[in-house]
Length: 278
Image 1 (spheres, rainbow, N blue to C red):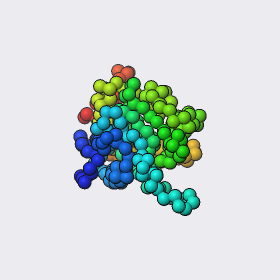
Image 2: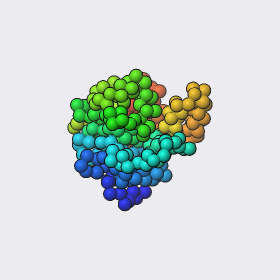
Image 3: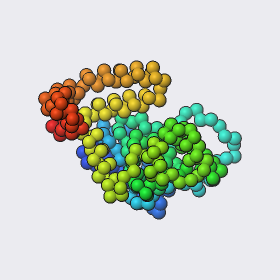
Image 4: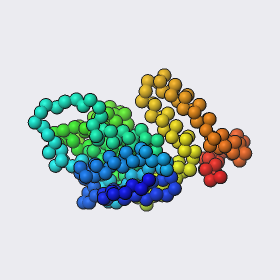
């Protein structure tokens, strides 16, 4: 896919890995224009059959996505009482596309991320930060509002109810190391190591059978279901996976190159990588 006519996001492709870099000076505020581009990107990615892994990063080393534009929020209509939406609003729909699409989504967060930017990041499959530099902040309650972009629902699922309340109600910064301990970040990496780690992980995942990656993500997403329903979905998806030609070939090759031998099993991660290289 072309991913053309974007003004605030740049794209680079390496095989089945697509990287998007947000460049919205001065600090990557999520304006209505940037929101529009991110929402269109989510729709295009959802339909993309060439990409296996998507990385979102920032051109600004100090800011990933600062937060949603407060001036735009002040302009939202308030002349009628609040009402419940019949379905997901546009922001929620965008966020959930990144979570549910067949593509693996990774947020490479090297600087600050706050408000709606942090909420969007929580919908990605994985989040990686920089030790001593990445900062997460939910700044809504001090402004008299609350996180309205999936944050009140996803943050308790990531870090637990008590920690979610601390993050949201205090408006304090969450440092990278604590974010890893609490489950918000996958890892906090050195500043000079995050690029190589994330790209290496993305390329490794993208090298594996596409159906297996897609079906595994679907199965893991089923963990939000009641356990019996999730297990039924897992069983169906497993049965689907073993019927794919790539799976049959990869399993046969695994046995050929030393799988299920003592020597092979002692270096199983390397053996898996060798499968992808064959």
